[in-house]
Image (cartoon, rainbow, N blue to C red; front, side, top):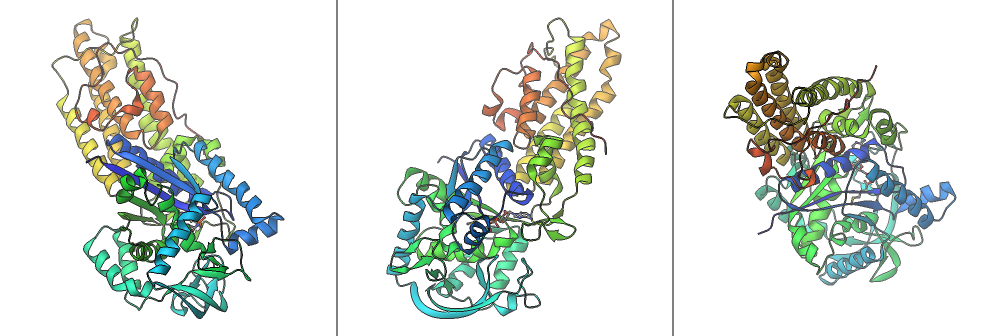
Length: 511
Ligand code: ME8
């Protein structure tokens, strides 16, 4: 069986420009995607924009544009931002795409025909920011906990999805699939929510109030509720219902989201899939918020950080590294530029940067003329080799549990071992004595090998930096085609490989 990996980000609302929070999820998805490729999986990576609903209409009005013009413009901002952050997705979906509308309509019909959609009246507290109704119990001091505004009481006739019918099934499913929703705190949160009776989900909006949406196939006076429309993107993007990619990738679907949208993904979505006769996704992976001064970074709170300005100031790979090293997946993290500078100087300029520049400089200097990595003698350094395979094993295990920070700590642990090895073997002393020439060759070979392993391991996180190191190590094979298997064994650099000098990859920045 071919091993496949399907990774999705939320499709972002086009009512706000991309900020650090969106960048985090999308970079994390990219890192996972690259890591699974490295592990030999066939992967598919989807991101996109969510373009229907009240919020977009209001934002378009404020901008003096039609919803479609407005959505076209902001969707393009997202689409153009991702390549600048080295994000290589396979497919960018927009909910205004015709094929997506067709899939939404086909699922609505299916669920309607099976009797799980009915017409009724409902009054409830509606938060326009979240585009959903709240139960009084979910409000904090009468306000939406995310947007900190009092929701509006709305009463109208609408269509409802019989979500309550699937409550017991969902509890059972989560119970028998412990890592369906992870980390565990979010699984527990969903289970706690399911302790109370689940209400049916209102899945329409009358066109008299909102007409920017997908028309219901069974009543043309209504559009589809934006969440019912948006979640289905994950199926459209792989060509549901009868394409090869759908069959191949859907069973390995991993959704990546922040905790703000846990309820739609942990409750609405699996019950919608069940009602439509589709297998549930494989994993829902939930991370915390990037906060600024203990408040969530968000457009509505006006405290956003622009990813491109950080990238311009510190370089792309440093930015990617910081995001994944600083946040413990699942918990909130506080953003501060000071913390970024500290990480930059200690982990990147100091630990990694020094290792790279002094290692390659020594190969070039002591074996000059041809700048060749010396051929390995029988004296492989076993301690270093064991540290290397230990690091590889640990990184694989940590990535599988989405502990990006611990995966990076494992790589940096190995970087420290290599730096220590260099200090202890002191190649600069060996170089002074002609009779130590062979020993010097062995030491430099071991260092170059270690650097090869490190380069492959950091590639998913810092693709541009890894490429630079790879090129200067002079390895002929393409870094993009490397597999984890290639670094489990020691000895991948061919003797005689020509190394070339490298400039400081992370010059220190002043605080
Ligand atoms: O909710 N910290 O779109 P959205 C971490 N369209 N991540 C953050 C963040 C923060 N401060 N702010 C935003 C929607 N994010 C819907 C999704 S999916 C079928 C529909 C990230 O534009 C995080 O991934 O509000 C969060 O879940 C997402 O942006 C919300 O994006």
